Length: 95
Image (cartoon, rainbow, N blue to C red; front, top):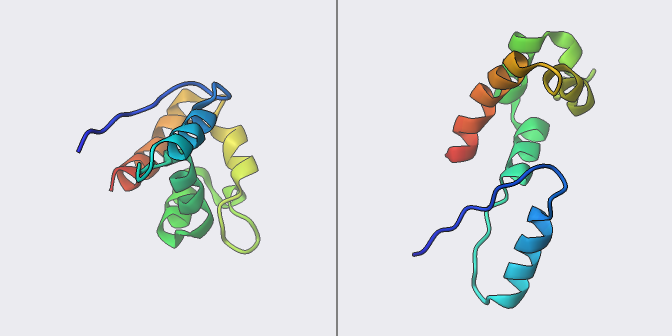
């Protein structure tokens, strides 16, 4: 099986290109790491626990799920914080 990786910055058309590839090539499989991260942040209790440990209770909603808006404000302006979050998420995405 041939594998390709598509990378790029925010709003560079990665999702659009993947959608076009799926439409044009029958049977092609696409793994969307952004969707995987969203699912981990929304549904994985272990991830929520790690986020709380790293960033405090304010990074979670009242229901105990990750508050993506708060997390975004904590990590996108702080390279060290982003690296800590990536340390939680990236191994799970690779799995």
